[in-house]
Amino acid sequence: IGQSDYRAYAGSFTGGLNGVFWIEIPEQPKRNDGLVLIRNLHDVGKTKVKQVERAIELDLIYPLVRGRDTNKWMTKSSCHILLAQDTEKRIGIDENWMKQNLQKTYAYLKEFERELRTKRKSGVVRDLIKRGAFYSMFAIGEYTLAPYKVCWREQATFFTASVAGSSKVIGKNKVIIPDHKLMFVPLDNEREAHYVCAVINSSPSVLIVKSYGIETQTSTHVLNYVRLPKFDAKDKLHRHLAELSKQAHAVAAESEPDTKRLEDIETDIDKAAAELWDITATELTEIKFSLADLK
Image (cartoon, rainbow, N blue to C red; front, side, top):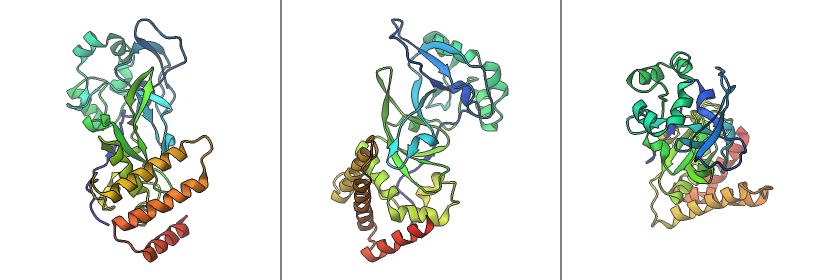
């Protein structure tokens, strides 16, 4: 128990108008103009908007993962997000630049300008609009575009995490963007991401979270209590934990996961995490008994 060497962030927040920024890409023949046909998910969230189909540039389209897309050892994008955000300035990309460089994307957003200005009630988002473009969003920084993320749901009965990397959008690899119902640790290295995921998915970590947190609300504060040491590529134990997480993800991704194999991997992760924290075999057994009682 203690402060982690890592920091977690909340995912992207549209300000309550997901129906503009969340999109799907209908099946379509390959276009010759380099544009992508998109359809907005007009009826998601409390505030509905009109549904349109438009051809826009690929540049700002990313795979989106929501809470429903994330489970233990597995994250899979089910739709996309339009991320028209300057991650350094943390406001919407300059409108003049958009008009000149991404005309179709800007025209699409312009169709919803009234709703984006008037129907988003978040005070933080409204302040961002005053300082930047009308399509500005919240909780997006350079960390949002990290190549790897260890994600967990804000609302879940039991704390579980998985590694999200990249996904193809019209043949191009794009980093996965979590929505605001997901918390995540941004990382540049795949092995380090799997190390983090293995440790926080271990039984000692889950019991810590379960013992202090509100059962259905698991926010970024997890890493204020789970003392997760910084990954050291030279440390054999750290590398072993990373490899176990990769194995667990591979099994979970199978069309019919081998439950027994996954349980064996998780047992090995618990043993390695216990070694990391100097927890004895007897103490680990008690921890697992306690978790079983809480389920």
